[in-house]
Image (cartoon, rainbow, N blue to C red; front, side, top):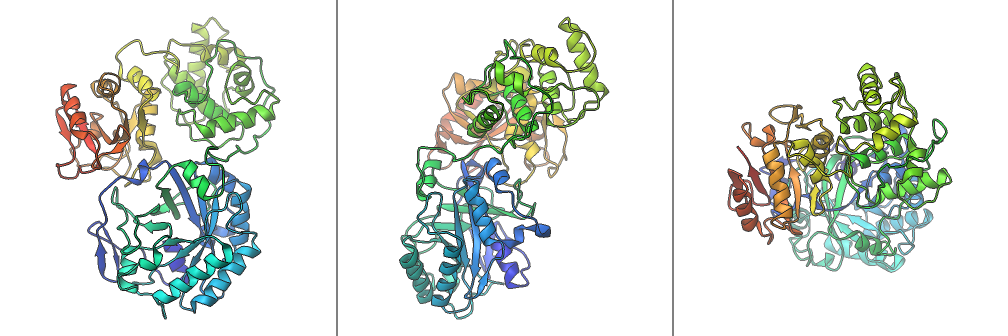
Length: 575
Protein backbone atom coordinates (compact mmCIF):
# COMPACT_ATOMS: atom_id res chain seq x y z
CA UNK A 1 0.00 0.00 0.00
CA UNK A 2 2.70 2.40 1.11
CA UNK A 3 4.86 2.79 -2.02
CA UNK A 4 1.97 2.67 -4.42
CA UNK A 5 -0.19 5.32 -2.80
CA UNK A 6 2.73 7.67 -2.37
CA UNK A 7 3.83 7.18 -5.95
CA UNK A 8 0.32 8.10 -7.07
CA UNK A 9 0.51 11.24 -4.96
CA UNK A 10 3.69 12.08 -6.94
CA UNK A 11 7.38 11.84 -6.35
CA UNK A 12 7.75 9.19 -3.70
CA UNK A 13 11.43 8.44 -3.26
CA UNK A 14 11.39 5.21 -1.25
CA UNK A 15 10.87 3.90 2.23
CA UNK A 16 13.48 5.36 4.57
CA UNK A 17 15.26 3.04 6.95
CA UNK A 18 17.76 3.88 9.65
CA UNK A 19 19.06 1.93 12.59
CA UNK A 20 16.39 -0.72 12.08
CA UNK A 21 13.58 1.84 12.41
CA UNK A 22 11.20 3.54 9.99
CA UNK A 23 11.71 7.30 9.68
CA UNK A 24 8.63 9.52 9.45
CA UNK A 25 8.94 13.30 9.68
CA UNK A 26 12.44 12.91 11.14
CA UNK A 27 11.28 10.56 13.90
CA UNK A 28 12.88 7.13 14.16
CA UNK A 29 10.43 4.58 15.54
CA UNK A 30 11.97 1.48 17.12
CA UNK A 31 9.23 -1.14 17.39
CA UNK A 32 8.79 -4.09 19.69
CA UNK A 33 11.15 -7.05 19.30
CA UNK A 34 8.87 -10.09 18.85
CA UNK A 35 7.88 -12.81 16.42
CA UNK A 36 8.97 -12.75 12.78
CA UNK A 37 6.21 -12.37 10.16
CA UNK A 38 7.23 -15.76 8.79
CA UNK A 39 5.76 -17.38 11.90
CA UNK A 40 2.20 -16.22 11.20
CA UNK A 41 0.11 -18.70 9.22
CA UNK A 42 -2.56 -16.36 7.78
CA UNK A 43 -1.27 -14.06 5.06
CA UNK A 44 -2.59 -11.69 2.43
CA UNK A 45 -1.90 -8.94 -0.09
CA UNK A 46 -3.05 -5.41 -0.80
CA UNK A 47 -3.10 -4.06 -4.35
CA UNK A 48 -3.81 -1.01 -6.48
CA UNK A 49 -3.45 0.03 -10.12
CA UNK A 50 0.33 0.08 -9.64
CA UNK A 51 0.32 -3.71 -9.42
CA UNK A 52 -0.94 -3.99 -13.00
CA UNK A 53 2.45 -3.73 -14.66
CA UNK A 54 2.09 -3.32 -18.42
CA UNK A 55 -1.68 -3.00 -18.03
CA UNK A 56 -1.96 -6.72 -17.24
CA UNK A 57 -4.77 -8.02 -14.99
CA UNK A 58 -4.20 -9.86 -11.73
CA UNK A 59 -4.90 -13.59 -11.84
CA UNK A 60 -6.76 -13.86 -8.54
CA UNK A 61 -7.11 -17.64 -8.76
CA UNK A 62 -3.31 -17.87 -8.89
CA UNK A 63 -3.03 -15.46 -5.96
CA UNK A 64 -5.34 -17.64 -3.91
CA UNK A 65 -3.65 -20.88 -4.97
CA UNK A 66 -0.26 -19.45 -3.93
CA UNK A 67 -1.43 -19.51 -0.32
CA UNK A 68 -2.76 -15.98 0.17
CA UNK A 69 -5.76 -15.88 2.52
CA UNK A 70 -7.09 -12.34 2.02
CA UNK A 71 -6.77 -9.23 -0.15
CA UNK A 72 -7.41 -5.51 0.19
CA UNK A 73 -7.90 -3.49 -2.99
CA UNK A 74 -7.47 0.26 -3.39
CA UNK A 75 -10.77 1.97 -4.22
CA UNK A 76 -10.34 5.72 -3.84
CA UNK A 77 -8.09 8.60 -2.84
CA UNK A 78 -9.25 11.98 -1.65
CA UNK A 79 -12.64 13.30 -2.75
CA UNK A 80 -12.52 12.73 -6.50
CA UNK A 81 -10.17 9.91 -7.52
CA UNK A 82 -11.10 6.26 -8.11
CA UNK A 83 -8.63 3.48 -8.86
CA UNK A 84 -9.27 2.38 -12.47
CA UNK A 85 -8.72 -1.30 -11.60
CA UNK A 86 -10.79 -1.35 -8.43
CA UNK A 87 -14.04 -2.88 -9.70
CA UNK A 88 -12.24 -5.57 -11.71
CA UNK A 89 -9.89 -6.45 -8.87
CA UNK A 90 -12.66 -6.62 -6.29
CA UNK A 91 -14.72 -8.82 -8.61
CA UNK A 92 -11.71 -11.03 -9.32
CA UNK A 93 -10.96 -11.56 -5.63
CA UNK A 94 -14.64 -12.29 -4.99
CA UNK A 95 -14.82 -14.83 -7.82
CA UNK A 96 -11.65 -16.50 -6.51
CA UNK A 97 -13.37 -16.92 -3.12
CA UNK A 98 -10.66 -14.82 -1.47
CA UNK A 99 -11.82 -12.72 1.52
CA UNK A 100 -11.55 -9.13 0.32
CA UNK A 101 -12.11 -5.50 1.24
CA UNK A 102 -11.61 -1.99 -0.24
CA UNK A 103 -9.36 0.76 1.09
CA UNK A 104 -9.36 4.57 0.87
CA UNK A 105 -6.20 6.69 0.93
CA UNK A 106 -6.89 9.81 3.01
CA UNK A 107 -6.16 13.04 1.14
CA UNK A 108 -6.32 16.78 1.69
CA UNK A 109 -9.98 17.41 0.87
CA UNK A 110 -12.85 17.63 3.41
CA UNK A 111 -13.53 14.34 5.20
CA UNK A 112 -17.22 14.30 4.31
CA UNK A 113 -16.40 14.57 0.59
CA UNK A 114 -13.84 11.77 0.87
CA UNK A 115 -16.34 9.51 2.64
CA UNK A 116 -18.93 10.14 -0.07
CA UNK A 117 -16.41 9.29 -2.81
CA UNK A 118 -15.37 6.07 -1.04
CA UNK A 119 -18.85 4.78 -0.17
CA UNK A 120 -20.30 5.58 -3.60
CA UNK A 121 -17.38 3.83 -5.35
CA UNK A 122 -17.47 0.63 -3.29
CA UNK A 123 -21.26 0.37 -3.48
CA UNK A 124 -21.12 0.75 -7.26
CA UNK A 125 -18.73 -2.22 -7.32
CA UNK A 126 -21.24 -4.35 -5.39
CA UNK A 127 -19.51 -4.12 -2.00
CA UNK A 128 -21.77 -3.83 1.07
CA UNK A 129 -19.38 -4.65 3.91
CA UNK A 130 -21.66 -7.40 5.19
CA UNK A 131 -21.81 -10.01 2.42
CA UNK A 132 -20.06 -13.37 2.72
CA UNK A 133 -16.37 -12.96 1.89
CA UNK A 134 -16.31 -9.19 2.51
CA UNK A 135 -13.76 -7.87 4.99
CA UNK A 136 -14.36 -4.45 6.60
CA UNK A 137 -13.40 -1.34 4.60
CA UNK A 138 -10.08 0.35 5.36
CA UNK A 139 -9.03 3.95 6.02
CA UNK A 140 -5.38 4.46 5.06
CA UNK A 141 -3.66 7.24 7.04
CA UNK A 142 -0.13 8.00 5.83
CA UNK A 143 2.31 10.84 5.52
CA UNK A 144 3.63 11.97 2.14
CA UNK A 145 7.29 12.95 1.92
CA UNK A 146 7.36 13.13 5.70
CA UNK A 147 4.45 15.58 5.83
CA UNK A 148 0.91 15.23 7.13
CA UNK A 149 -1.91 15.58 4.57
CA UNK A 150 -2.83 19.22 3.90
CA UNK A 151 -5.79 20.44 5.97
CA UNK A 152 -5.56 17.30 8.10
CA UNK A 153 -7.31 17.12 11.46
CA UNK A 154 -8.26 14.44 13.96
CA UNK A 155 -11.83 15.72 13.70
CA UNK A 156 -11.75 14.91 9.98
CA UNK A 157 -10.66 11.34 10.72
CA UNK A 158 -13.50 10.99 13.23
CA UNK A 159 -15.97 12.36 10.68
CA UNK A 160 -14.78 9.95 7.97
CA UNK A 161 -14.95 6.92 10.24
CA UNK A 162 -18.37 7.89 11.58
CA UNK A 163 -19.78 8.48 8.08
CA UNK A 164 -18.48 5.19 6.62
CA UNK A 165 -19.64 3.23 9.67
CA UNK A 166 -23.10 4.77 9.42
CA UNK A 167 -23.48 4.16 5.67
CA UNK A 168 -22.03 0.64 5.51
CA UNK A 169 -22.95 -0.57 8.97
CA UNK A 170 -19.46 -1.87 9.76
CA UNK A 171 -16.47 -0.28 11.51
CA UNK A 172 -13.54 0.37 9.16
CA UNK A 173 -10.10 -1.07 9.73
CA UNK A 174 -7.46 1.66 10.13
CA UNK A 175 -4.05 1.45 8.43
CA UNK A 176 -1.52 3.77 10.08
CA UNK A 177 1.64 4.04 12.21
CA UNK A 178 2.66 5.36 15.59
CA UNK A 179 4.78 7.98 13.84
CA UNK A 180 1.76 9.27 11.89
CA UNK A 181 -0.27 9.65 15.06
CA UNK A 182 2.64 11.35 16.83
CA UNK A 183 3.29 13.78 13.97
CA UNK A 184 -0.23 14.46 12.68
CA UNK A 185 -2.58 13.75 15.60
CA UNK A 186 -0.58 15.15 18.50
CA UNK A 187 0.27 11.67 19.74
CA UNK A 188 -3.38 10.94 20.55
CA UNK A 189 -4.90 8.09 18.54
CA UNK A 190 -7.89 7.60 20.84
CA UNK A 191 -10.23 8.31 17.90
CA UNK A 192 -9.01 4.98 16.49
CA UNK A 193 -9.97 2.98 19.58
CA UNK A 194 -12.27 0.09 18.74
CA UNK A 195 -11.04 -0.19 15.16
CA UNK A 196 -8.95 -3.11 13.93
CA UNK A 197 -5.39 -1.84 13.49
CA UNK A 198 -3.35 -2.54 10.34
CA UNK A 199 0.25 -1.34 10.58
CA UNK A 200 3.32 -1.39 8.33
CA UNK A 201 6.83 -2.27 9.42
CA UNK A 202 9.36 -3.18 6.71
CA UNK A 203 12.72 -4.98 6.56
CA UNK A 204 12.64 -5.41 10.31
CA UNK A 205 13.03 -9.12 10.88
CA UNK A 206 11.14 -9.82 14.06
CA UNK A 207 10.50 -6.17 14.96
CA UNK A 208 6.75 -5.69 15.09
CA UNK A 209 5.03 -2.35 14.38
CA UNK A 210 5.07 -0.01 17.37
CA UNK A 211 1.69 0.36 19.13
CA UNK A 212 -0.39 3.39 18.15
CA UNK A 213 -0.82 5.65 21.20
CA UNK A 214 -4.43 5.86 22.35
CA UNK A 215 -5.71 3.10 20.05
CA UNK A 216 -5.97 0.74 22.98
CA UNK A 217 -4.76 -2.31 21.06
CA UNK A 218 -1.84 -3.57 19.01
CA UNK A 219 -1.77 -4.50 15.35
CA UNK A 220 -4.07 -7.16 13.92
CA UNK A 221 -2.64 -6.98 10.39
CA UNK A 222 1.06 -6.38 9.78
CA UNK A 223 2.27 -5.19 6.38
CA UNK A 224 5.85 -6.46 6.61
CA UNK A 225 7.20 -5.77 3.11
CA UNK A 226 6.37 -3.79 -0.01
CA UNK A 227 8.81 -5.70 -2.21
CA UNK A 228 7.21 -9.13 -2.34
CA UNK A 229 6.28 -11.31 -5.30
CA UNK A 230 3.10 -13.36 -5.59
CA UNK A 231 2.07 -15.66 -8.47
CA UNK A 232 -0.67 -13.98 -10.49
CA UNK A 233 0.31 -10.38 -9.64
CA UNK A 234 2.21 -8.78 -12.56
CA UNK A 235 4.31 -6.39 -10.43
CA UNK A 236 6.88 -8.93 -9.22
CA UNK A 237 9.11 -7.43 -6.54
CA UNK A 238 6.58 -4.70 -5.75
CA UNK A 239 3.78 -6.47 -3.94
CA UNK A 240 2.72 -5.55 -0.41
CA UNK A 241 2.65 -8.64 1.83
CA UNK A 242 0.81 -8.89 5.12
CA UNK A 243 0.16 -11.29 7.96
CA UNK A 244 -2.91 -11.57 10.19
CA UNK A 245 -2.48 -12.03 13.93
CA UNK A 246 -5.10 -14.68 14.50
CA UNK A 247 -6.39 -17.95 13.11
CA UNK A 248 -7.86 -18.55 9.69
CA UNK A 249 -11.33 -19.19 11.20
CA UNK A 250 -11.03 -15.82 12.95
CA UNK A 251 -10.23 -14.08 9.66
CA UNK A 252 -13.14 -15.85 7.99
CA UNK A 253 -15.52 -14.71 10.72
CA UNK A 254 -14.32 -11.15 10.12
CA UNK A 255 -15.29 -11.73 6.46
CA UNK A 256 -18.77 -13.11 7.38
CA UNK A 257 -17.79 -16.67 6.52
CA UNK A 258 -18.06 -19.93 8.46
CA UNK A 259 -15.05 -19.90 10.74
CA UNK A 260 -14.72 -23.69 10.71
CA UNK A 261 -14.52 -24.03 6.97
CA UNK A 262 -10.80 -23.49 6.40
CA UNK A 263 -9.73 -21.86 3.18
CA UNK A 264 -12.68 -21.25 0.90
CA UNK A 265 -10.78 -22.48 -2.11
CA UNK A 266 -11.08 -24.63 -5.15
CA UNK A 267 -8.08 -25.41 -7.29
CA UNK A 268 -8.09 -23.94 -10.82
CA UNK A 269 -9.62 -26.24 -13.40
CA UNK A 270 -6.88 -28.59 -14.61
CA UNK A 271 -5.86 -28.68 -18.23
CA UNK A 272 -6.78 -31.79 -20.24
CA UNK A 273 -4.26 -34.60 -19.67
CA UNK A 274 -1.39 -34.94 -22.12
CA UNK A 275 -2.18 -38.63 -22.50
CA UNK A 276 -5.00 -40.93 -21.52
CA UNK A 277 -5.08 -41.97 -17.88
CA UNK A 278 -3.30 -45.22 -17.11
CA UNK A 279 -4.45 -48.18 -15.05
CA UNK A 280 -4.45 -47.91 -11.25
CA UNK A 281 -0.99 -48.14 -9.69
CA UNK A 282 -1.37 -50.99 -7.21
CA UNK A 283 1.03 -50.75 -4.29
CA UNK A 284 1.68 -47.03 -4.67
CA UNK A 285 1.65 -44.99 -1.44
CA UNK A 286 -1.75 -43.66 -0.43
CA UNK A 287 -1.48 -39.93 0.29
CA UNK A 288 -3.99 -37.88 2.25
CA UNK A 289 -4.20 -34.86 4.54
CA UNK A 290 -1.12 -34.54 6.76
CA UNK A 291 1.02 -36.86 4.58
CA UNK A 292 4.54 -35.56 4.08
CA UNK A 293 7.65 -36.40 2.15
CA UNK A 294 9.06 -37.37 -1.21
CA UNK A 295 5.94 -38.95 -2.66
CA UNK A 296 3.89 -35.85 -1.77
CA UNK A 297 6.36 -33.67 -3.66
CA UNK A 298 6.02 -35.99 -6.68
CA UNK A 299 2.21 -35.80 -6.52
CA UNK A 300 2.31 -32.01 -6.24
CA UNK A 301 4.50 -31.71 -9.34
CA UNK A 302 2.20 -34.05 -11.27
CA UNK A 303 -0.81 -31.99 -10.18
CA UNK A 304 0.98 -28.87 -11.41
CA UNK A 305 1.59 -30.61 -14.73
CA UNK A 306 -2.20 -31.07 -14.89
CA UNK A 307 -2.88 -27.38 -14.28
CA UNK A 308 -2.66 -26.81 -10.51
CA UNK A 309 -0.44 -24.16 -8.99
CA UNK A 310 0.96 -25.72 -5.87
CA UNK A 311 4.12 -25.07 -3.90
CA UNK A 312 5.76 -28.51 -4.07
CA UNK A 313 6.79 -28.44 -0.42
CA UNK A 314 6.10 -32.07 0.45
CA UNK A 315 3.27 -31.10 2.82
CA UNK A 316 -0.18 -32.51 1.99
CA UNK A 317 -2.18 -29.53 3.25
CA UNK A 318 -5.47 -27.88 2.37
CA UNK A 319 -4.34 -26.52 -0.99
CA UNK A 320 -3.04 -29.92 -2.10
CA UNK A 321 -6.26 -31.60 -0.96
CA UNK A 322 -8.31 -29.06 -2.93
CA UNK A 323 -6.15 -29.56 -6.02
CA UNK A 324 -6.54 -33.35 -5.78
CA UNK A 325 -10.32 -33.07 -5.49
CA UNK A 326 -10.47 -30.74 -8.49
CA UNK A 327 -8.29 -33.13 -10.51
CA UNK A 328 -10.40 -36.13 -9.49
CA UNK A 329 -13.61 -34.35 -10.46
CA UNK A 330 -12.19 -33.47 -13.88
CA UNK A 331 -11.16 -37.12 -14.41
CA UNK A 332 -14.53 -38.45 -13.19
CA UNK A 333 -12.94 -40.14 -10.17
CA UNK A 334 -14.31 -40.14 -6.64
CA UNK A 335 -13.40 -36.67 -5.34
CA UNK A 336 -12.21 -37.78 -1.90
CA UNK A 337 -8.99 -35.75 -1.89
CA UNK A 338 -6.90 -38.91 -1.44
CA UNK A 339 -4.18 -39.91 -3.89
CA UNK A 340 -4.68 -43.66 -4.15
CA UNK A 341 -4.02 -46.19 -6.96
CA UNK A 342 -6.64 -44.75 -9.36
CA UNK A 343 -5.58 -41.15 -8.87
CA UNK A 344 -1.91 -42.07 -9.29
CA UNK A 345 -2.86 -43.85 -12.52
CA UNK A 346 -4.62 -40.72 -13.76
CA UNK A 347 -1.75 -38.42 -12.73
CA UNK A 348 1.19 -40.20 -14.34
CA UNK A 349 2.27 -39.15 -17.82
CA UNK A 350 4.46 -41.20 -20.20
CA UNK A 351 7.70 -39.30 -20.72
CA UNK A 352 10.74 -39.71 -22.93
CA UNK A 353 13.90 -37.82 -23.82
CA UNK A 354 13.13 -34.27 -24.97
CA UNK A 355 10.11 -33.84 -22.66
CA UNK A 356 9.99 -30.78 -20.40
CA UNK A 357 7.86 -29.45 -17.57
CA UNK A 358 6.47 -30.26 -14.15
CA UNK A 359 5.85 -33.93 -14.94
CA UNK A 360 9.56 -34.31 -15.70
CA UNK A 361 10.39 -32.60 -12.40
CA UNK A 362 8.15 -35.16 -10.68
CA UNK A 363 9.94 -38.00 -12.47
CA UNK A 364 13.39 -36.67 -11.60
CA UNK A 365 12.39 -36.14 -7.99
CA UNK A 366 11.09 -39.70 -7.68
CA UNK A 367 14.17 -41.11 -9.39
CA UNK A 368 16.34 -39.28 -6.86
CA UNK A 369 14.25 -40.83 -4.07
CA UNK A 370 15.23 -44.22 -5.54
CA UNK A 371 18.92 -43.43 -5.53
CA UNK A 372 19.59 -41.29 -8.62
CA UNK A 373 21.44 -37.97 -8.40
CA UNK A 374 19.68 -35.80 -10.95
CA UNK A 375 19.13 -32.08 -11.24
CA UNK A 376 15.38 -31.53 -10.95
CA UNK A 377 15.37 -29.04 -13.82
CA UNK A 378 12.30 -30.32 -15.68
CA UNK A 379 14.29 -31.23 -18.79
CA UNK A 380 14.36 -34.91 -19.81
CA UNK A 381 17.92 -35.12 -21.11
CA UNK A 382 20.52 -37.89 -21.39
CA UNK A 383 21.15 -38.02 -17.62
CA UNK A 384 17.47 -38.55 -16.87
CA UNK A 385 17.21 -41.16 -19.61
CA UNK A 386 20.21 -43.00 -18.13
CA UNK A 387 18.64 -42.94 -14.67
CA UNK A 388 15.37 -44.33 -16.08
CA UNK A 389 17.26 -47.13 -17.84
CA UNK A 390 19.18 -47.96 -14.67
CA UNK A 391 15.96 -48.22 -12.69
CA UNK A 392 14.32 -50.31 -15.42
CA UNK A 393 17.23 -52.74 -15.46
CA UNK A 394 17.15 -53.04 -11.67
CA UNK A 395 13.42 -53.79 -11.76
CA UNK A 396 13.58 -56.29 -14.62
CA UNK A 397 11.89 -53.98 -17.13
CA UNK A 398 12.93 -53.31 -20.72
CA UNK A 399 15.61 -50.57 -20.40
CA UNK A 400 14.28 -48.30 -23.15
CA UNK A 401 14.65 -45.04 -21.21
CA UNK A 402 10.94 -44.22 -21.55
CA UNK A 403 9.02 -43.53 -18.34
CA UNK A 404 5.76 -45.28 -19.14
CA UNK A 405 3.13 -46.80 -16.82
CA UNK A 406 5.23 -49.78 -15.73
CA UNK A 407 8.25 -47.59 -14.97
CA UNK A 408 6.14 -45.15 -12.99
CA UNK A 409 4.59 -48.07 -11.12
CA UNK A 410 8.06 -49.40 -10.27
CA UNK A 411 9.10 -45.96 -9.03
CA UNK A 412 6.01 -45.36 -6.92
CA UNK A 413 6.13 -48.80 -5.29
CA UNK A 414 9.90 -48.72 -4.74
CA UNK A 415 10.69 -48.36 -1.04
CA UNK A 416 14.41 -49.09 -1.35
CA UNK A 417 15.25 -45.43 -1.82
CA UNK A 418 13.18 -44.35 1.16
CA UNK A 419 9.95 -42.96 -0.27
CA UNK A 420 7.65 -41.05 2.02
CA UNK A 421 6.26 -44.18 3.70
CA UNK A 422 9.57 -45.91 4.32
CA UNK A 423 11.23 -45.28 7.67
CA UNK A 424 14.94 -44.50 7.38
CA UNK A 425 16.99 -47.64 7.74
CA UNK A 426 20.28 -45.84 8.37
CA UNK A 427 21.52 -42.77 10.18
CA UNK A 428 22.46 -40.99 6.95
CA UNK A 429 21.63 -37.31 6.63
CA UNK A 430 19.28 -37.97 3.70
CA UNK A 431 17.39 -40.65 5.64
CA UNK A 432 17.16 -38.38 8.67
CA UNK A 433 15.91 -35.48 6.53
CA UNK A 434 13.21 -37.74 5.12
CA UNK A 435 12.07 -38.62 8.61
CA UNK A 436 12.12 -34.98 9.74
CA UNK A 437 9.92 -33.93 6.82
CA UNK A 438 7.15 -36.23 8.02
CA UNK A 439 7.60 -35.84 11.79
CA UNK A 440 4.53 -34.25 13.41
CA UNK A 441 5.39 -31.38 15.71
CA UNK A 442 8.27 -30.03 13.61
CA UNK A 443 7.46 -27.30 11.12
CA UNK A 444 9.75 -25.40 8.76
CA UNK A 445 9.51 -21.75 7.72
CA UNK A 446 8.74 -21.19 4.06
CA UNK A 447 9.89 -17.55 3.89
CA UNK A 448 12.81 -15.49 5.14
CA UNK A 449 12.39 -12.31 7.15
CA UNK A 450 15.44 -10.76 5.47
CA UNK A 451 15.78 -12.33 2.01
CA UNK A 452 13.31 -13.23 -0.70
CA UNK A 453 15.01 -16.39 -1.96
CA UNK A 454 12.45 -19.21 -1.85
CA UNK A 455 15.06 -21.86 -2.70
CA UNK A 456 16.92 -21.46 0.59
CA UNK A 457 14.10 -21.41 3.15
CA UNK A 458 14.05 -23.99 5.92
CA UNK A 459 11.29 -25.83 4.01
CA UNK A 460 13.33 -25.89 0.82
CA UNK A 461 16.50 -26.93 2.68
CA UNK A 462 14.96 -29.95 4.39
CA UNK A 463 12.96 -31.17 1.38
CA UNK A 464 15.98 -30.76 -0.91
CA UNK A 465 18.08 -32.68 1.58
CA UNK A 466 15.45 -35.42 1.74
CA UNK A 467 15.62 -35.61 -2.06
CA UNK A 468 19.39 -36.08 -1.92
CA UNK A 469 20.25 -32.72 -3.47
CA UNK A 470 21.70 -30.94 -0.47
CA UNK A 471 20.49 -27.66 1.02
CA UNK A 472 20.91 -24.38 -0.88
CA UNK A 473 22.36 -21.23 0.67
CA UNK A 474 20.96 -17.82 -0.23
CA UNK A 475 22.53 -15.87 -3.11
CA UNK A 476 22.45 -12.81 -0.81
CA UNK A 477 24.60 -14.57 1.81
CA UNK A 478 28.37 -14.22 2.30
CA UNK A 479 28.97 -17.50 0.47
CA UNK A 480 26.52 -16.99 -2.40
CA UNK A 481 24.22 -19.75 -3.63
CA UNK A 482 25.70 -23.21 -3.23
CA UNK A 483 24.62 -26.71 -2.15
CA UNK A 484 25.56 -27.80 1.39
CA UNK A 485 25.00 -31.16 3.07
CA UNK A 486 23.13 -30.87 6.36
CA UNK A 487 25.06 -32.53 9.17
CA UNK A 488 23.61 -35.87 10.30
CA UNK A 489 24.40 -35.15 13.97
CA UNK A 490 22.41 -31.94 13.85
CA UNK A 491 19.44 -33.63 12.13
CA UNK A 492 19.57 -36.48 14.63
CA UNK A 493 19.56 -33.87 17.40
CA UNK A 494 16.43 -32.30 15.95
CA UNK A 495 14.65 -35.66 15.91
CA UNK A 496 15.70 -36.29 19.51
CA UNK A 497 14.45 -32.87 20.61
CA UNK A 498 11.04 -33.87 19.30
CA UNK A 499 10.85 -37.61 19.95
CA UNK A 500 12.85 -37.95 23.17
CA UNK A 501 12.42 -34.54 24.79
CA UNK A 502 8.90 -33.81 23.54
CA UNK A 503 9.53 -30.32 22.14
CA UNK A 504 7.35 -29.03 19.30
CA UNK A 505 9.21 -26.44 17.27
CA UNK A 506 9.32 -24.24 14.18
CA UNK A 507 12.65 -24.20 12.33
CA UNK A 508 13.40 -20.85 10.71
CA UNK A 509 16.87 -21.46 9.27
CA UNK A 510 19.30 -24.16 8.23
CA UNK A 511 21.80 -22.86 5.64
CA UNK A 512 19.64 -20.07 4.19
CA UNK A 513 19.42 -16.45 5.25
CA UNK A 514 22.25 -14.02 5.96
CA UNK A 515 24.58 -14.67 8.91
CA UNK A 516 28.11 -13.74 9.98
CA UNK A 517 30.78 -14.67 7.45
CA UNK A 518 32.05 -17.53 9.66
CA UNK A 519 28.61 -18.82 10.63
CA UNK A 520 28.16 -22.57 11.02
CA UNK A 521 24.86 -22.17 9.19
CA UNK A 522 26.77 -22.01 5.90
CA UNK A 523 28.39 -25.38 6.67
CA UNK A 524 25.12 -27.16 7.45
CA UNK A 525 25.96 -27.48 11.14
CA UNK A 526 23.22 -25.42 12.79
CA UNK A 527 19.53 -24.57 12.93
CA UNK A 528 17.45 -21.74 14.38
CA UNK A 529 14.12 -22.14 16.20
CA UNK A 530 11.70 -19.27 16.86
CA UNK A 531 8.79 -21.16 18.41
CA UNK A 532 8.81 -23.87 21.08
CA UNK A 533 5.66 -25.75 22.07
CA UNK A 534 3.51 -23.14 20.32
CA UNK A 535 5.06 -20.16 22.13
CA UNK A 536 7.41 -17.65 20.48
CA UNK A 537 10.94 -17.47 21.82
CA UNK A 538 11.30 -14.31 23.88
CA UNK A 539 7.57 -14.31 24.69
CA UNK A 540 7.44 -17.04 27.31
CA UNK A 541 8.75 -20.08 25.44
CA UNK A 542 10.74 -22.70 27.41
CA UNK A 543 13.94 -21.67 25.68
CA UNK A 544 16.27 -22.49 28.59
CA UNK A 545 15.12 -26.12 28.76
CA UNK A 546 15.37 -26.34 24.98
CA UNK A 547 18.89 -24.91 24.98
CA UNK A 548 19.97 -27.31 27.73
CA UNK A 549 18.62 -30.23 25.69
CA UNK A 550 20.59 -29.03 22.64
CA UNK A 551 23.79 -29.07 24.69
CA UNK A 552 23.09 -32.57 25.98
CA UNK A 553 22.61 -33.71 22.39
CA UNK A 554 26.08 -32.49 21.40
CA UNK A 555 25.56 -28.89 20.27
CA UNK A 556 28.65 -26.84 21.10
CA UNK A 557 27.26 -23.39 20.21
CA UNK A 558 23.87 -22.68 21.82
CA UNK A 559 22.53 -19.11 21.82
CA UNK A 560 19.19 -17.58 22.73
CA UNK A 561 17.54 -14.72 24.69
CA UNK A 562 20.26 -12.96 26.64
CA UNK A 563 22.77 -13.36 23.81
CA UNK A 564 23.25 -10.49 21.37
CA UNK A 565 21.11 -10.87 18.26
CA UNK A 566 19.17 -13.87 19.62
CA UNK A 567 16.32 -12.30 21.58
CA UNK A 568 13.65 -14.00 19.48
CA UNK A 569 15.20 -17.34 18.50
CA UNK A 570 17.39 -20.18 19.73
CA UNK A 571 20.47 -21.17 17.73
CA UNK A 572 21.97 -24.66 18.12
CA UNK A 573 25.16 -25.60 16.25
CA UNK A 574 27.44 -28.61 16.10
CA UNK A 575 31.20 -28.60 15.42
